[in-house]
Length: 147
Image (tube, rainbow, N blue to C red; front, side, top):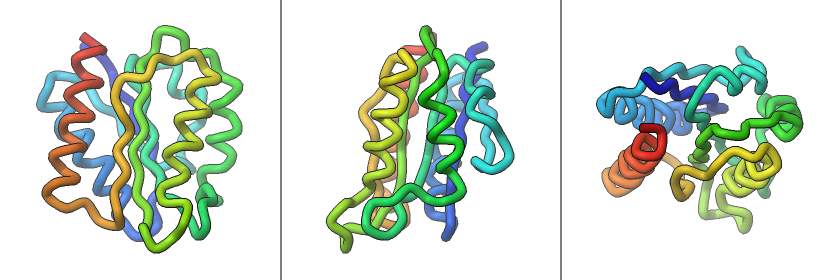
């Protein structure tokens, strides 16, 4: 059984909810899922998984949340060849740099030699029905590449 590891940063709970939607769908598709808040794990923990996912909110004018900066920095030094990655996140369309953390993590994963398994999903604030549909499709695409 393939293992999916999801690491998230969430201030208001929106991004944790996004991570939970993805986790539930992956489990329904037969993957084992390990989900952790970013301050409780190391980026190197991704080396134990087949599918690696980051869920992060974007803070202010496009900044990474303080609590995930170390994880982000360490991620870029890993060799994740053979791993499948995906990125989801939340932001606020009020800001010019909507969900920039999602783009930053995509760029970080590109340095690891991991394979992109699905198009990233950006959610405006809390996930609504249309967002949940996109998040479930994201999980389906990752699961298809993992099997």
